[in-house]
Image (cartoon, rainbow, N blue to C red; front, side, top):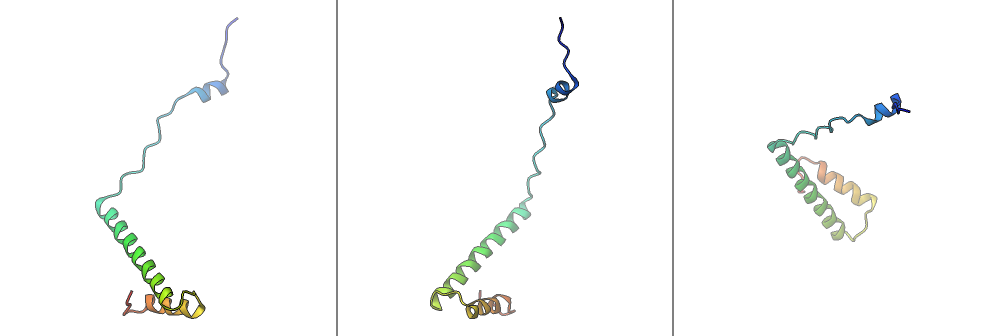
Length: 77
């Protein structure tokens, strides 16, 4: 008796090349990512500082003031 593999077994026994890794991001793209992350951390620190200075509660008024400060052209943040 001989053994003959089925088409299903043959299909799953085939090896394929591994998927290629995503290309490495360029220098300026990585630098921009770092700058954006640093700016986000700075903004979060400023918001936390403002909330502590105004009593530690995140009220509607505090939210409006934070938005006004962040979205104004002469932002202190």
